[in-house]
Image 1 (tube, rainbow, N blue to C red):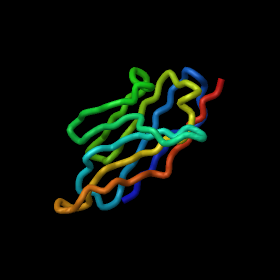
Image 2: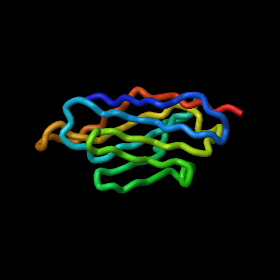
Image 3: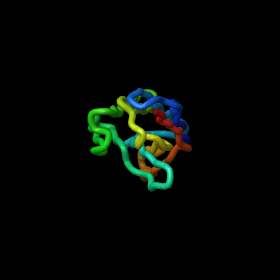
Image 4: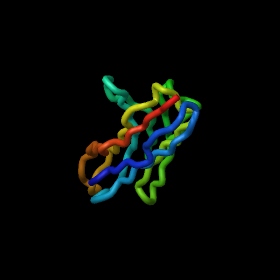
Length: 120
C-alpha cells in the first residue's frame, strides 16, 4: 500500500491550495482518511478527517477555511485550503486506516508529505 500526496507549493497569505492524496496497492477497504499538518519545530497535528460513511471533522484552527473530500471509487482524498495563513505553512501528511482483505486488521499508512509555504 502506498499513499502519495501532491499539490503543495508556495502561496500568498489569503490564497488557496488543493492537496491530493492517492492511495494505491492492495486495498480492500478504507475506514478513515486524515490530513495531518506539521509546522516547523512542532508536532504533527490532525487537521481533518473523513470516514467511509461520509462523516467529516476538522481542527478548530481550520474550520470554515479547509474542506476535506474523498473519491471512494478511486481511493483519493483532497484538502481544499482557502484563506491560508502563515501558521498553515508546513508539511501536510495523508493518513489512511485501511485493510487489505476482508478478514484482515485495519492498519494505518502514511504518505511522505507535501510542503506548503505561505508567504506575505
